Length: 583
Ligand code: NA7
Image (tube, rainbow, N blue to C red; front, side, top):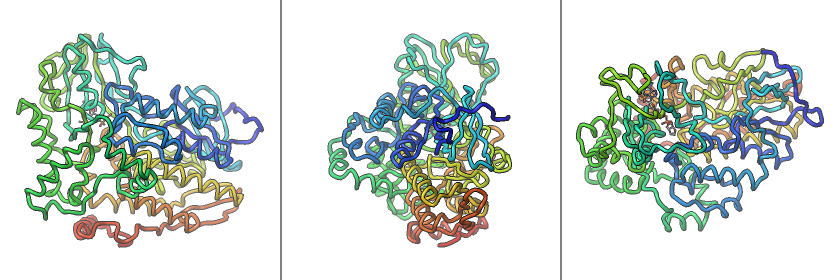
């Protein structure tokens, strides 16, 4: 596609930066760059800010990280003036927060809504990106910043005969803004991931009857949601800065009381007490109970069995409880869900669970869904079938770098990046929480803040030295991919057919996409890269190479890995023919 009509900027100059997406990442990037004297603009497909919280309006949608931590920390006044009503804020409140941030920092004047970027081509001679949108508007920018989100494009899942169904079809990730009233309706829902697990209890409470079509059960922990307990609020309020710094200095970017104890070396009654304590606390806290549960199958099974027991306690029918119990993947190898009343919903007389493994879905017809066993009649069906994660939104842009190389061709074996921030052959193009960064394994807002600040520092450094482009070297990119593989190999994360692995999209290359080394380690690596004068990057002024540092040598400080895990980690790396570059 040739990029033609151009909307000249006011002074005829290219924008300093075009940011794609007005979710939390794009919003903070815009604010940060404006504050540094740059001239950025944002293009956003939706009609408002908020990204994930703009699109995912399904009933029960809420954040799975505590709100005290899942909120911006870049502005102390903003932090002080906003009060969350619940431990885990619901979608409407998160959207209100995004709108509040947009208003407070006057962001909307630089955001072009209802516009989707369709193509971006690097113009080597002019050292700019030429960008085209689906509404015909085109623009030029020196830097292209993809804040497109990790879970923003639904998978193309379709079912035979879906268009013949006479009832209503809803996707959780494209929920009608006016809401849906299921009162008195017969409803079917396909999927039992986080979106379904959050919405099922609410839909069940409205509908005459709800049929849940499950292919694979997931682990879910209770949120124990409600107002923020006073003691938690006080712990935060007495030192919000310190609290946030402590959150950022963790593997997941949130406080989880991560223990260094090994389940395999702990007495059964102590294990029990610890898991009960964390279950009672709720949410992701159970993930931090034992250091070996992420790497040692025996330790992981201890936690799996505990959760299976909790499911049996909540679900009256043992056969239904058994069907709801995950058996095909270790705990934590898919992002676990955080629910409010999910399992107990299956005790309701108006709720039915269909096991698609035993009776596969054959097609939709005018009445509803036909499985190999029977037809289920519905007034409405909800598709909670997931996302083309991490690469979906980037792949859908006709992105071409140096020499017209397409990103799709560069990523044919899986997304390769340097630090999850840049891609070799794609100068001046940044990704926020892109593949190769900790992103979806963490509290996204803390990851977003780290990326935005790193990118902003980088743009300031380039500007001060009148450098026109920065690009990841192929060598550094390869070294980062290798380091990412080293980080994930000792864990059990690659064992699940997860969207982390691209396994939910037919034909997508299998590769563990996020960086599993932890946010704290990652932040330290990025700091070292900058301190070494942008190690691993090629920096140019026009066609003159000013600095060329091709290697990536920055490594996590020794001691960041709990000592008692080192033997397991070394054994796994050796078995995989990988040895860490530095230990
Ligand atoms: P997920 O977690 O990817 O869940 C999608 C669900 O849809 C999952 O249960 C899938 O079963 C199911 N699915 C997908 N395609 C089909 C077909 N063709 N037939 C039957 N069932 C299907 O997406 P969510 O939106 O729930 O959550 C995404 C993330 O958002 C979540 O991890 C949190 O971080 C927040 P499968 O497992 O593939 O058998």
